[in-house]
Length: 432
Image 1 (tube, rainbow, N blue to C red):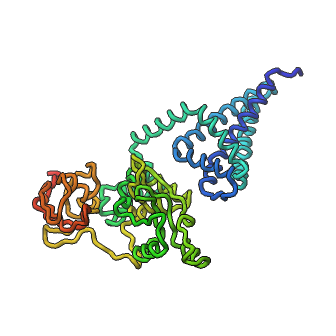
Image 2 (cartoon, one colour):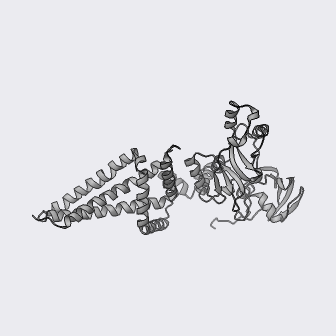
Image 3 (spheres, rainbow, N blue to C red):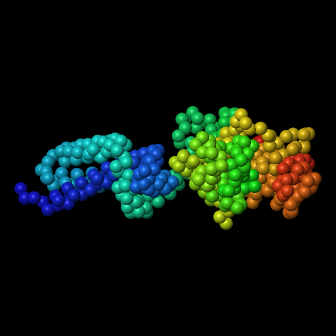
């Protein structure tokens, strides 16, 4: 029997589509393993490609769509080629053999040899595949981009039609029912509701809304003496102290108190040289989302970042504790002196911390202050609405409130008294 010239093409096609199926089976395993692992500082090559992969994983829907589309296309083409190749090799085969043999062959190749075994090996030896997986993914993701973009958009369109919330996809059915029920307020207690809503809002909340503003930053100058630094640490109790050059606008690094203890155990105080102990800072823009920053903290093993404004100056700092407090509320340790943001003096009179978020102020006092304004705190509202730097005992009225400035520290508002003159009217939603 003469050899069919198409055989070589079919064999080549089968091999290539099989390799593609293997690649799309293992690429997500490799990427996830890279994300979860820590690569030593001595391996600069792998650290470089690991950082590139972490950047790719910031857009998970596209990664998942690329893998699904790529694997589906390669498997379909493999199955079609296997069927046609078998018909060429055995033209006289019975119909059961014509269909049965390719199905069994395709099933074994695409499940056992292109899925389970490669995934198991890549999970164990993923470091060996980081570089080729990165380059292969970049090439195929570019080629498949029109298909994956359409797939993601169509997928989200269908979910909106079905009113399916992906945010709750990980929850058991009974928990989904509790959250989506009309008796939401009764199904969950207040603390559970606040935590769930806070977690869901992380993707929309920026670091600007939770940061410690520049004026409140406790920092030391780069040329500070040892006693000055120790006094700041003793008075403030922080484990990390920002270090600046000339002004707080130029934070150049971070000082860890544990490093000072190690240094003092090996050196004399007169040998003090602060720049030698300063570590690099992690800088992020003021508009960065909290959930993105939290991922960076986890991946890079950080606990603090310096927030930079649009002009390159210091806007504030944010810590992992600030992010956790956004979810679970204020966290007090044994050294913190708890200060309430709102203290009720009378039925409609309150003593307020000017740093309170407007959303929290609305909830505490049952108000309806605009939370979409250019400011986020009560202090920002006062400066904006009063139109000047207030003085102690300055008083003005705003939206049914009488606001009195009780304490100032230079241009900084320290304490405010609010008298509610008129509550916002409640719109009834009850059916007649």
